[in-house]
Amino acid sequence: MEAFAHTLDILMFVAVCVVLMAGFPVAFTLSGVALVFGVLGYMAGVFDVSFFLAFPQRIFGTMTNEVLVAVPLFVFMGVMLERSRVAEELLETMGRLFGKMRGGLGISVTIVGMLLAASTGIVGATVVTMGLLSLPTMLRYGYSPRLATGAIAASGTLGQIIPPSIVLVILGDQLSNAYQKAQLDMGIFSPETVSVGDLFAGALIPGLVLVGMYMVYQLLMAVFRPESSPAMPAAEAGDVTTGKVLHALLPPILLIVAVLGSILAGVATPTEAAAVGAVGAILLGGYRLNEEKPWPVYIAGLSLIGVLVLTGLMDLRIARTEISAGDWVGTILAAVFCIGVGFGLLVSLMRVLRGNVLVPVMRTTTQITAMVFVILIGAALFSLVFRGLGGEEMVHEVLTSMPGGALGAMIAVMLLMFFLGFFLDFLEIVFVVVPLVAPILLMLEMPGGGTMSPVWLGIMMAINLQTSFLTPPFGFALFYLRGVAPSSVKTMDIYRGIIPFVFIQLIALIVLWYLPALATWLPQVVYG
Image: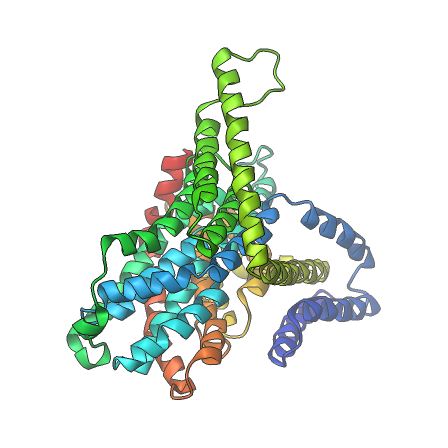
């Protein structure tokens, strides 16, 4: 009977892949297939229906998870920035700044992709925006369609790895649960934790290394195949003043510093920093829509920075028995700053509402957030049935019997996630695969002694998941780009253009494999 239950587990996983490839919605596929195989297992006497009783508690736990509140806030921030024309100005300014050199347009696309990744984290919006604005320009100046489409698609996916990233938020939540479960299974009843902030800090250096590798590849193409990436004519590039560069770069950089800086400095949790990012995006949208009257936004922006600084320097809690005179002054000053933020926020909200920006942003945010959470609920039911059929024991047995111990199991999991990325979205992989394999990997002993670092494991998985957006035939970044690319660009040009960047991703994984300190050094410095 145990063998039959394991057979049902394998068939359930295969059925999900087949049904998803047939085009059925992800969330309903996961829950529907789970229900069907749960009933089959019950009829065969290998599944206990009491597992279904845990499902409502799973949903309640998901809805009350404070970490996941960051998802709609980061989505809102990204969509608001995308609608505020920040990307358009960045692309135009960077294109003119670097366009005079060979490969300069490709490098500008990579830099803008990095900045948008650090300020939006939404792959679809970034790829579509850069595809609409940069691709026609690159083709007009003689860029190879393969190099141009590959650079845009790859740079657009940097939002998967460069924080603040929705992928890292979701992955951090799943890894936190997996790490605690692994320690409890090892008999450690006061387990350590891994947070989304740890993953944000751990992803920063590998993300920048990946950006550098993209740039090096494009510079090598400009040297060895100069016809693939010609320079813009100097007359058309024009002169880019320092003022224009600062006008394009300063607002998103300030927002990045406010969000990431507050997390890394320990002033705010990722969820609180996401709220700061959402407020900053509204202020930036209000500024862009009426630059002739910027002073309410300036007041709010400076007040927001003041609140963050005071929070880091003083104890502003008022529910205390003894409050020093200095803390009272800081508290009153923080209240004044909050009034300034509220005033600028109200003005900005009125501007984005009158500019027909707020309603589409709210609608898109609701759609994306609902999709994420419905998939999460479907994945919870799928994992319950999988565990009820004995799948967890089967996965544990397979991974622990791998040659090479922990490293062999890690290689097997990374290969599985890489190949699943050809067919599944990152959400299905994070919600279904990670909870099954991560606790087992985190329990296995490494060759040098000790267990695997959860931060290193998370960043390895994140870079691997990034390839799921790039790998044919179902890479979502390729679909987004195909939808906005001119008809002169063939689909095979996009597929072939992305192949070198997929290899760069794999090289980045190998580098991180041999240099795990790239992911673990900064979290140790920041959080100890």
